[in-house]
Length: 250
Length: 325
Image 1 (spheres, chains in turn orange, blue):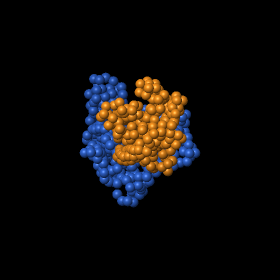
Image 2 (image 1 turned 90 degrees about the vertical axis):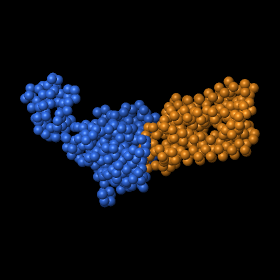
Image 3 (image 1 turned 90 degrees about the horizontal axis):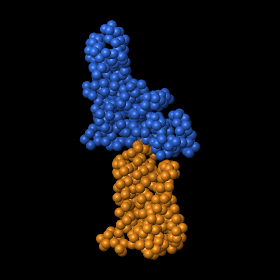
Image 4 (image 1 turned 180 degrees about the vertical axis):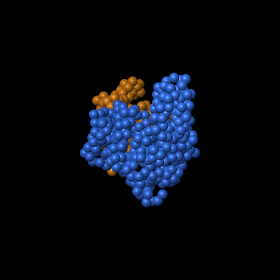
């Protein structure tokens, strides 16, 4: 029952994207734009060559892409409340969790799609995996798991805040500093000491380090364990908060 | 009321109360709707209509009191209630970004129908509601009337035995409203129990077999539309003399007819309540005899505000409902 309902609602959310060419193009192009801009504008200055920077930045950019890509979860869920659709769903004999689960499923699919595109283009530009097949598969798995965690965080914003505009603004203010004040784009070494302290504990840095370990080889066990802990923590905390707030509001 | 009554009536509520903060939205509301009836819940904004519907459709919990639909308790057995009801809310709750066909198919699937059955039911409803031609069009490109019809169709996918319509025609043009009224009558004729809320006395009069007027969460009147009109002082006669200078003379003529209320004057329009429709003919004759030429003479139902004034002694207050939305 729940599985069918989740699939039906995931399909509905996917239809939103598939039937809107602008959105489809936007979600495909935007991460690519980030990739190309960062690599060719900053690459030479940061790593000495664009090719070296591409190797450095791609694993982190995948993490950043999830951060921005899951905005749709927050905004979409919020809009469903605004339009009274949640009331419609709640008046049906269906599982309450299916609404959020359907949303998350659709957004994970989108995230996976964007990640595959970005890795494909990066490979064409010269990116090479050094972690072997296991590393590549592991990286993809980590992207999906991270996507789930971020979706729950975003779902909470979507349910907790009043308007889609407020959701958009809050998500941006949260994700922008978290992804920039991290080791995604630049190694932390050149930053002032106080910022380095933040970057080190910033979960986005930890995810990036784990992704680098998987895609490029290098230290893996600790960042992977820490990532798993963060992912589990975010999912549990925001999953519970979302369901609680959803019940209260709906 | 006995439990026997609650078992036989389609919708039953006893002493429902609900507050949002310090504001009491429903105050010990009793309600009973027999199976197959169209029941009108009439009241101004903020009367508690939407809150009552939300409680009866399991979307909100009452602070106290109890309610059941087809014998299922709305608090203790919400899933059973949801299996037998359909709800069309005040704001058309359909997905704007997908087509009408996809909307109905989605609801069918969520109700547990198989793919083919959900598709067939969607096609059937699109046909019934005159939306088959625009079935593949995204709902955001629909007119207000089409959206409302789709919304009603969406609440009928599961063939509910009890249908809740929260202000189904608010904001609709006349043609769309009449169309929707026809659909509601057909549904009731086919055995569906309908509870509809409205701000318009005319709507309740045209559709409902029984009407309850609520104000600030309290029942202020209940009965058939005819009884209610009686309470409100019958129909309203409007007279607009051709010459403004005749206004006082016309008012005197109308006041002289036995049984009418004291005429009220707004600008060049006289309104007077006529409990007996024969008085309309009498009024026309008397005005002619007095040599007063008339530009406009019409009979209408009292507005909700006039009915309110007659029943409660105060004007319907316009305040916003739904602080808990």
